[in-house]
Length: 73
Image (cartoon, rainbow, N blue to C red; front, top):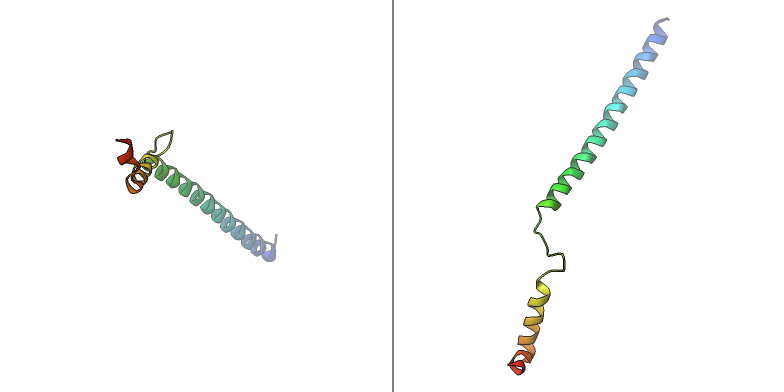
């Protein structure tokens, strides 16, 4: 092996190594973001499986505004 082959293999090896490290960096960042999103979703306010209570609150507000509640009493 002469000097030309040695330099070519050095450049080729360094290029492959840098590309490999960059791919590993991208994969780790992707998985880290997904894990953070999963933890964030897990810590969010829990909603009742049958719906949110704001539906009933909105209906009560509508009844009060239209006067329906006074007719029911």
